[in-house]
Length: 322
Ligand SMILES: Nc1ncnc2c1ncn2[C@@H]1O[C@H](COP(=O)(O)OP(=O)(O)OP(=O)(O)O)[C@@H](O)[C@H]1O
Image: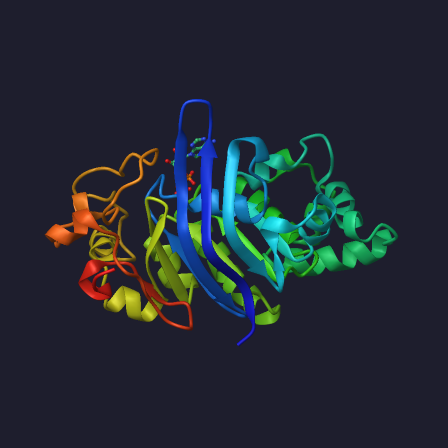
């Protein structure tokens, strides 16, 4: 299997004059071609930090990044500015929850799309661009008519569809959707997820879906990585993890979604709060909230159980002594 992305001991720390915030810690992750990986965790678990770090969008002055992030053979952490520019959109594209807000209100959608297209294909003709975009708009269920409209003439759902179409313009090797459908109503969200699945069949796509919503993962991903306080706790196939969760945090997270199709509730199943990420802890980061915690969980980090395919369990119940 071709590896698209492989993180090894990947750390992201926010640094200011007064403190450090350890937002992503010793992350190991693999994504194979064709995978759709959901990264799930409650607010503040470090999901967006990870995405921003992969795109190298975090300010260098106030963040420390260590470890490696191999993306189709190159370590993203070591790329120069020029190499990064070449890679963004073309090989690695992202859609954020607020991506639709980054469209300029005073220019027609089509003009903006043309400008973005020409970053990588400066000599492209209007016809060539229009053909490509018409095809992509169709994939996200929008008519070519949108091309001549201004952003304020479109609904939120339509704008987010435009953002997704733009992100696919250069057929990226990896698409990251960071809460890309979260702000939309449930019906539109469902439609867009269906469209993403259809697109994936048509284009040769590999996708990371960052979300706090387990139902999004269950309907649109084949693998899932459960993140808590900056660490991956469990990584596996969706069908296994959802049916037979192993990590106590995964179990808690799933029980807060009683019916994956039903109403969403907050993380009520797990008492307590996220730990203070400006401190480093000797034991398992989840121990203070864990109902299965043993003495050793407070004293030492679990030895991670990892497989060659990138599956993981980060828990004393499974890993044994360090
Ligand atoms: N610029 C920053 N400086 C210091 N700490 C930060 C900064 N940005 C985020 N953090 C902290 O890093 C941790 C991870 O935040 P992050 O936004 O990545 O989590 P998240 O899982 O994406 O949450 P959400 O779902 O709410 O977006 C949090 O504790 C947050 O307070």
